[in-house]
Length: 417
Ligand SMILES: *Cc1c(COP(=O)(O)O)cnc(C)c1O
Image (tube, rainbow, N blue to C red; front, top):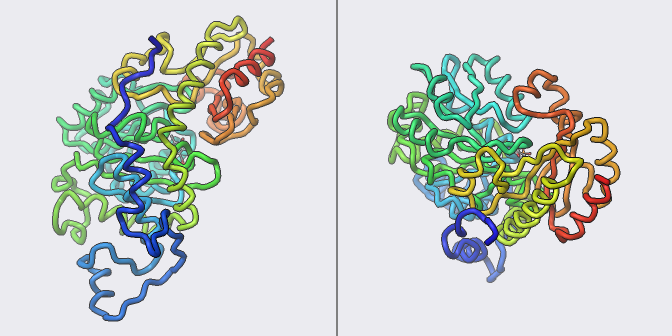
């Protein structure tokens, strides 16, 4: 039997997603949520305007920097996927991540983060260190490394579920237990797996982040990000919540602060146009995840037995160091893999010989994308950092698209010959 990881998420994952818009009541019976372009939202009675400002009129809008009916519909859809207590959309995944780090950490706090993170996240963590937040980068595949890095002023632990490009997987469950025991906020970037592949709440994550620009939107035509509160973290003891947001149910405090400080004040707002494109794309998430995971598995198996290939990084392979974790927690092993060549000198030639994949950065388009990462994304990081992140000079990242597996395989076969 082919190894596909754990069974699908909740029954009805796609059913919920495709009907989410209609539950909110769309004008004129429109099947999809309209694109609301108004910047201002006006009221007949000033009391209602006041109610929106003071948060007593639920579901109201005042100025589009804090959201529109279109972005709110997408937030509801994504929140349903993660089964969270609330979600906030942002202009990009980076805007969502920055909102978390900048609104929930202060100078003097300590953050433990994975050493294996998205390049721009890694770069932002350096900025955060410049602002006075102590940052420890650790090998999160070992939970004891996280435990050893903790200090009295540690506030947050940050990991990615499946690291790009090396596909390292943190010890998700043990880190979750550690955070729970120490009262730390556990933040998980789940971009590569998506809520279809994994729900970080299951391992105790308090906040989940996704770049919507990748597999959730899925068509490479819109940027976006989302932060979801899973309800697992007790905000009542978190010292960095401003007095203004210590109001009402403590479960809402974290997101209140992220929306006001991170979205309203910092302004990384998702446009309604992009929200609409992402919402339509998200309806086929389950289909695209199943398809691209199966293709990626076939390609990984093909590459793993090829004589020109030194190493394949893909969690679906039994040889992957965290295969057991992936099998236990992930549904499918995702659309991202990377491989190293035996002869490093052939790296660019192999890329150029490939006919179907586009030589492009970015991930999870409908088309397969390849990139030699040491020469591009991790060039600025330098050789030492690359080595510490496990990035070989011949490493080629593959973001598997919707092409037929046989065609992709044939193309890789001719390119590697
Ligand atoms: C792409 C990506 C981001 C950033 O998302 P953008 O929407 O491009 O800003 C963050 N984390 C991971 C894991 C990503 O792949």
